[in-house]
Each structure stands twice: as structure tokens, then as C-alpha cells.
Amino acid sequence: MRLKFKLYASLGEYLPPGAERHSVTLEVPESISPMAILEQHGVPLAQVHLVLINGVFIPPGERHLPLSEGDELAVWPAVAGG
Image 1 (cartoon, helix red, strand yellow):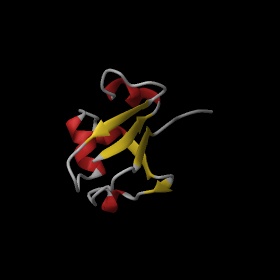
Image 2 (tube, rainbow, N blue to C red):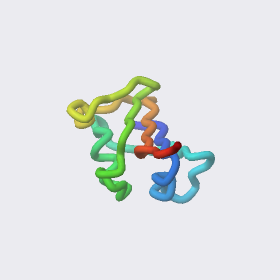
Image 3 (cartoon, rainbow, N blue to C red):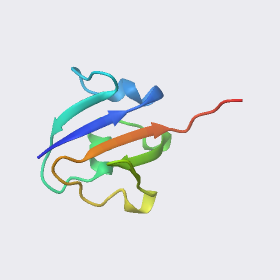
């Protein structure tokens, strides 16, 4: 199945080659979870803060649930500012 994978800020370095504007379309197995995608791309899970699927926040306890065809997975690290 195909889905859009977006990594923002410092996590952007973990996107595969060919990514443009923080985003890449992936071909992935059916029923893959957000956590599995992050692990496959070497994203340090300790740095993952916000996970959204189709613009909806996914709490940590639900990040193992399967994605669907056409989903958009967007991930941000914790940010600091002042």
C-alpha cells in the first residue's frame, strides 16, 4: 500500500533519498504501524514527540495500530524555544 511519510525539524534527516519538502511517498506492507515505519527508517523513538495520521494526533499507546492505504503519517520532535 502507499502512504505519505513526513518528518519535520531535526527528524527530517531520516527521510529516504528522494524526499522533497519533508515528505516522501512510501510503498509499505499492509497493516504496517507508525512505529514500524519509524523503526525501519532509523528514527530515534526517544526524539519522537507528535505523531499525526491524516492530521489527527495519535497518542503513544496507539502508535502500534495499523495504517491504511493513502494515510499521511507526520512526525515532529519535541521543540524548544523561548
